[in-house]
Image 1 (tube, rainbow, N blue to C red):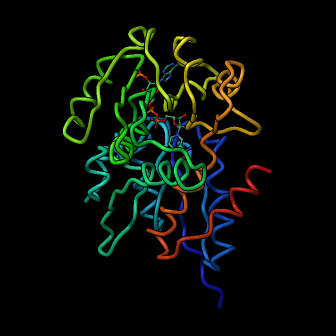
Image 2 (tube, helix red, strand yellow):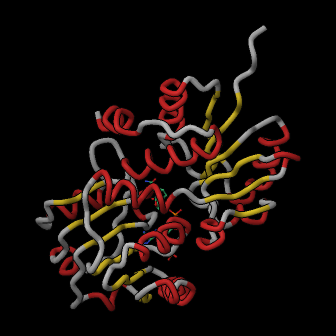
Length: 274
Ligand code: NDP
């Protein structure tokens, strides 16, 4: 008798671009785990029904992506400390009694790629974080723990940046702003955590600010490069990175939560790059 594989997936909208099914298939093969992982498209109004249906049919765990990381909180029975601090969930684990536990591996995945894989130093540096959505929420506490001299969150709707800065004020020197206020500023590290790239758009960052950066990191990823990274290169920034490394690292942390084994990310990242 052959056992059915355990079911996992990623839920978001849009989702067709997602590389997560491929990454988790590599992890499963590498670690000998018997599972399937699929992409589930759910428009905002469909999220509750899609999540319930997935788990009612035996699903074991879900990744949650744009734009559902905050909305999914309402469907969760318990939260990890880091998901509670972030106020956003990117990983759901089905626990005993069919209770759903929300966790957030975005922050640890980002920091691991930035510091361990890419060797970028954050301590004492001025950091600009673009965007104030679910991904930014996950990044804030781990980034502040690296002790930047200053962390500015800039958002298209400035009030969301101000609100986030207020929420995280006790964890480090963070403040919120609109893009227009940045004109005269200089930051060593600029992180693009907006969803602009999903529409092939650029965030309205003054080009003068981009030109003064030492390192740019775009959470978005795409075959080849992203529009933001391309723009940064055109502005003369030598150290520019897409979010492919973060994608693999946060996936490995989710895999660890679900299966109790952390896959080796090096080979998967190299294959994804290729
Ligand atoms: P959300 O939908 O929660 O938030 C989107 C954010 O982007 C908001 O701050 C929004 O501003 C801003 N935004 C959207 N469009 C534009 C635009 N045209 N110009 C300027 N700002 C814009 O998304 P997430 O935070 O979940 O995800 C953000 C990005 O990070 C996505 O591209 C996602 O793919 C990527 N990501 C990558 C990961 C990885 O592993 N590499 C992991 C997690 C996310 P406003 O508030 O004004 O609407």
